[in-house]
Length: 266
Image 1 (tube, one colour):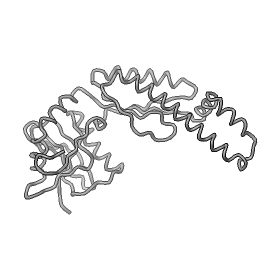
Image 2: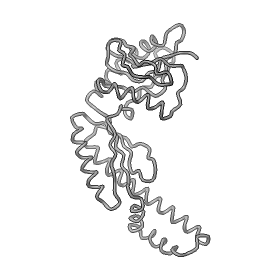
Image 3: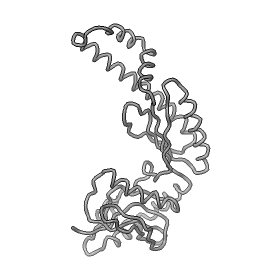
Image 4: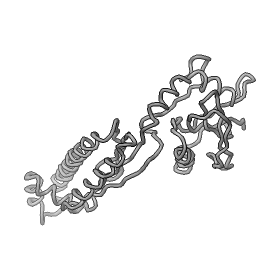
């Protein structure tokens, strides 16, 4: 299989550096820099192939950036971006010329913008779904009446009504979730310069948000999360906040490299 160079991120670095980190894949290839002037791509040797998006590979990609974040501002490169040799030009030379040199101004501006910012992740979850469903019944007169009407009646004779009740409850749950998520997102926006809602997992997840926060605002962001967690956790349905970060700013920066003709890299 042809060999290439896997690219993790772009950083400010004007010399060759080895980081003592294992690269993506089964071989634990050394992670190091390929640089042009003061910019460097963080790379490792890799077969030229499409890495499956699974936990092992995405964690390996993420781990390299997390370690580099201790000393650098990182610009994440899209997962499974690999430079290969072409027309007698080595993968590293293509990275230097077609990525770092041609897009140098773009990367310098992004690095300057991201230098004083961090990505923080917040997941908000209900801790007691029975209490949530009980609250929905009490809040919604139509659901409460239909539920009372069906109590004690055989399921095979009330299939249609029971399906309708389930749909009503799910719609009410989604509406309740949306109201809470919007309220929390809006509250946290005053401590962040950008935010993004991500995919939810499971009925008990209310919000999965990413926030780009200036470093000098992180203590205020932390304090407000603690206040929200305490205040909302004391309510009857119970709400828990899970704080993740700092993490590589993949929700706000993703370098996409299209290996096209000269001058047409994306």
